[in-house]
Length: 272
Image (tube, rainbow, N blue to C red):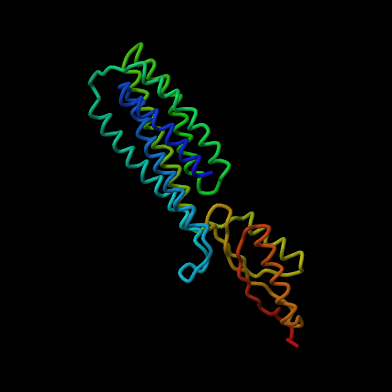
């Protein structure tokens, strides 16, 4: 699946790059540079994803899930660098006239189809590829704006094309800000109230009182945490072990949550 996404991204970017350099359009130039970043981003995403699904080892006792975040972080860095290059180019072009060829919107049209297919496949994969989907969605939006701005720049005035390039760059900065906030939330060990509530339900069905439930999101839909519960001292160690195992299994199977459970005796009762 990833190979197909990479191929489609590279193909779409190839046509946009042709439009940017051959057609002379600043809008398509912006589109072309983000296309290069887009293809590099999915390559990095693919590499980090492969590492993230490896089983636990002596250096990563809880698995390699978090390494998968290297993909979206790399994407953020790539697009930030491209945004800086674009701003410098637009600044240097400001106040100077240029000619836009009708080849620019033509190549932009051709490059739109591969990107549409790439984003469809990436949505199907899910996980941390959602960040790739976001920036590829930017590419789709850019394609429509680029086609219109480049065509108007070719038949009416280059100023329309230049304004289109500024609009695309502004939108890119908006998406960079959104992605930064979401990545920050991932690495801040945010808890899910929904997961906590479902864990409480799993415990209550077995008549267990939870003194404390703590969970944190490791990556997309993967959680880890610990629970402190109270059990009657009259329950044998074997029975308590059986109950705890069933709770941990349900948490893993139903909620994709790895939990560690600590048992405390109920107060006011003597252990037998």
